[in-house]
Image 1 (cartoon, rainbow, N blue to C red):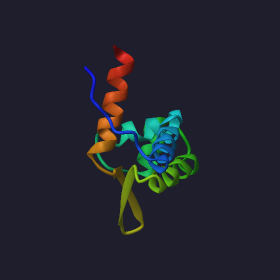
Image 2 (cartoon, rainbow, N blue to C red; image 1 turned 90 degrees about the horizontal axis):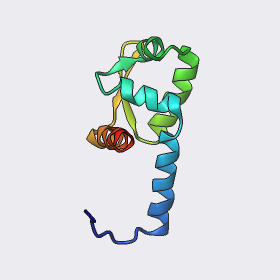
Image 3 (cartoon, one colour; image 1 turned 45 degrees about the vertical axis):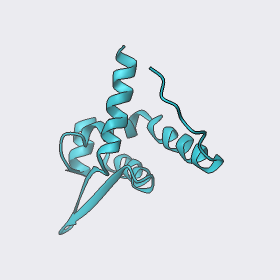
Length: 100
């Protein structure tokens, strides 16, 4: 099944390639999959994937800059979640592709 696409602009190609670079890091991908279940704080994410809070925070900063996660503050605790349904779609489609 082929879907006709119009060639994206050079800028769009660049930003799409940058987006895929973000997904190329296994730690960031683990964090994203962790957030498909529910929003979590850094400590909960770190416990789930077996990494330090510092390492998770560093990766979350990259994911925030790429607009793949969002956050909300409750007192001193920051909770993270997927930015929108597109992120879940990208993860689902990628997983489905490799499992074929």
